[in-house]
Length: 310
Image (cartoon, rainbow, N blue to C red):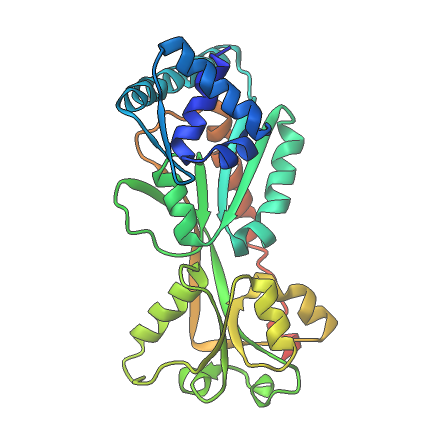
């Protein structure tokens, strides 16, 4: 219903890239360029400056972008209000989740939600926790689910369930026979951790900072970008790590990894993150309510397996 040229221009303006806009809109780059040129011809002025393979908005482009933001906000609110009147739960939702949550929590949650609301299309973006918070701040996604604390006081942070973190190692590792692992024992062996910006890494750093008796740092031997990469490195005997218990259930059952709780224990909340004052569609409200119930239901049945693996 909204002007396609304006939609394309708006996407290019947000991403400042014709290539990225084409990917997001599922269009070819020449088609994106054509739509923007059509809008420039309509206004009889350039909307982008193109220099050295980079683009920026002209003064006229800035003006059109400001109005486009207002137009699409009002358009979205109109659709949502009409949907609310008719009781319709449909539309497109953009959800973002940090890697651990996207791989081990959201597939079943979103699958169950989709069965209940088949007319809602969900686009899932995966990044580390810092990246997801930035997407919420930039209004790129409607809802984020993260695994670390959020500093921005303008965002709503709503804990949904607790997550236990455990030390993982090969079954033959000396620590695998322990009932618990003390912090000092972590310092004596090579440690494999996630990349900077990862929620898991931030939680471990905060945990270390709370242990006042500890004056040393972890012996970080590798930094890896996903839970799967961390598990593979540990399984190969390249060091130990601290990960969410939910991420190692398969490996514990297969006997290729062992997991031992920390002493003192380490837990963190998985949290929903969204903007305080943003108008939310029926579909996102339903997803939030559905996710709250799902987390409450599954909190009572947190994955078991640490004792069997020790």
